[in-house]
Length: 345
View 1 (tube, rainbow, N blue to C red):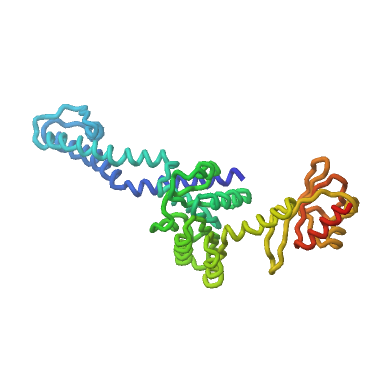
View 2 (spheres, rainbow, N blue to C red):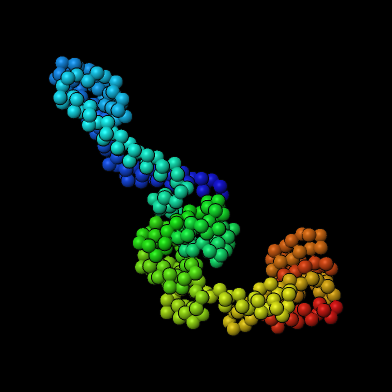
């Protein structure tokens, strides 16, 4: 698992170096022109002035003139003197303006250069683009990171507290307005499997979703929206997965208020489903997972033995023992029936 990120990073570094070379091609052209062109000109001009030197020495002399450090005597010749006067300011300007910026970008990739982000994103495929590094975006990142899904994050606020942890996980972060021209292209959206619009602005999320569909018609779009009415309209007319955080949280909060054993709740086909944690006791002891499913209509998704052993998705023949703790999924009615049995015991 660690080899692939290193290989992807090496590939990105090579691509990024090539991008920087293309971006600063005028700088490198000027350096070559000043060193080799200036050295060749000096070679012929010195020969014409009666002070011949080798071509290699003339090129080296031109190189040192870039930094205003002459290594050969300049004869009383107008053309040679003019060349010796012109090379230093042109060289210093080229080095200061071009090479320093090139070195800064090359050695400071972690400073969010957009080209570096774009190149790193080009190495990804079937990744998820997350827009917004707030609490919702961070929770999405946490879940996808546990699943090993590659991601890129777009966030306009550099001061967001979650960015450091996201970067430490190896996820590329673009500091930019997600609605800015080219932001989604830099995230390599055309090769992404999905985009999650998780900013705290409904209008921004809708705009980003529309832009994403323009770039890639069939991409899966998931949106966080605050307006519950807008959620249903978006689902029906836009063919997107839209969720209201308040609507998602409300059932869990309501059920937790009624019963502390209920950890989560959701609706399936108009029926309320709950996920609850219960201690095994009474008549449930000695029964199997399959029997509990058939008799009470509950699915056991997690079992913690009294010894501390944990079993996810236990098999049908697995028996319950006193002191075990089970996490079950069932309709609210089925759960309440099981709970009554345990309480009656």
